[in-house]
Length: 215
Image 1 (cartoon, rainbow, N blue to C red):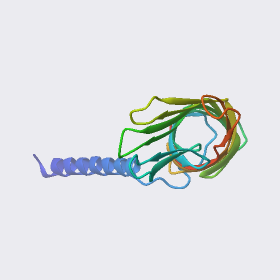
Image 2 (cartoon, rainbow, N blue to C red):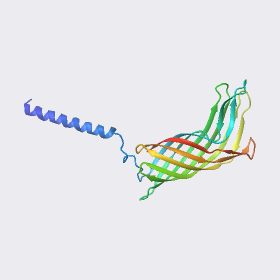
Image 3 (cartoon, rainbow, N blue to C red):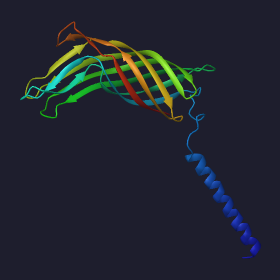
Image 4 (spheres, rainbow, N blue to C red):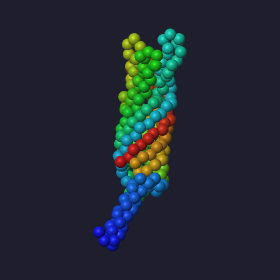
């Protein structure tokens, strides 16, 4: 191989290496604030979160000492949602529509007692988008709220409640076009209709945090 050909070959290899390095840097570089801004486009999303608050609906006690070992609140504890965001042309506004599941699950670490408070959710939240942030005020329907009490060695007890609508205030911050974190406050009351103290209301207001993946 002549010296001239060797030089051309080395130059070609160097160009390939530089191109590859530049592509890798572009792919793995840290997102800039501009990359994370809420853009005027519609997306699907999946969200997971934790929340707590509201009235205590059950307490788990040590069968021997009577000491409270845990308690379940009407506003707890974790939720998941799937849905989408609808963008509107030329305005920094979007509409989020999701369906999900909200549950409170408390299990005694002493015996087999447990409490479950489950409800399905459907939410409709308009958002105002500004840069990497957005803030929204909307409503969430809580469908078929049901509390099930399972004392160790005793028959289960089930409380059914009316469907309820919660007001919700939510704030989100984006890391990039796919990942965001946020906080929310919701206000709702449940009325017991069957199985428990009928007519009594339980305050389910809660504050929570969540992680969202958009695609």
